[in-house]
Amino acid sequence: MPNLDQYFDEIDAARIRRVRELSEIKTRFSSDSFPDIVGVNSKATVVLTYANWEGFYNDCVRAYVRFLRERGGKIRDTDWTLLLGAFHADFESLRARSHSYDARRQFVADLQVRLECGFDSFDDTIVEARSNLDFDRLSQNFSVLNIDLSSMQRFRIRLDKEVVGWRHTV
Image (cartoon, rainbow, N blue to C red; front, side, top):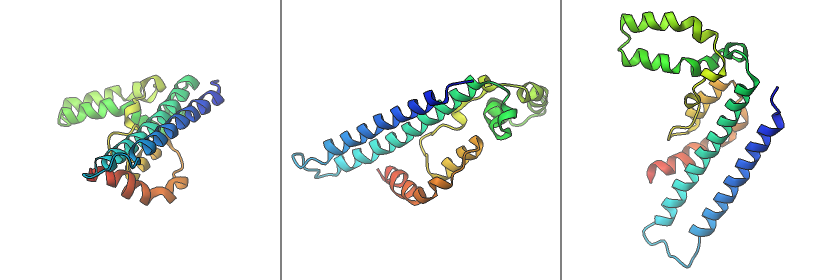
C-alpha cells in the first residue's frame, strides 16, 4: 500500500511553489517603476496566473494517478468511470477510422483486455488540463476521477470569468 502522506506532501510542495510563483508575478508586474502603458504587464499577469492554475491542477492529477498506479489493482475495481482513461486510445482509434465495421470489431475484441487492465494502462491526459481548464472541463475531469466538486462551486464564476475568461481576452 502506498504511503498516502507522501502524495499529500508532494501536492503541498507544489502548492507552496505555485504560491511563491504567484507572489513573484505580483511583485514583478505591480511595480510602479515600469509604467504599463499598453497593458503588457496586465496581459502577462493574466497568462502567467492561468498557467499557474493549470500547472497546479496537473501536478495534483499526476500525483493522484501515480498513487492509483502504486496502489495497484484493476481500474474497474476502483471506479468504472476511470475506464475512460484506459479506453481513450481505443476511442481515438474508432474515431480516426470513421467508426468503420473493422474498427468497431477491433474495439469489441479488445474490450475484455481493457476491462481487466490496471492503472498502468490509464492515460493521464484524459483528466489533465488541456489549455481550457474552465469549470465545465473541471467538472468533466472530476466526474471521471469520481471526486466531489461541491467544494469548488463557490469558485465557479471566478474561475470561468476571471482566470479563464481573462486569459481568452489576452
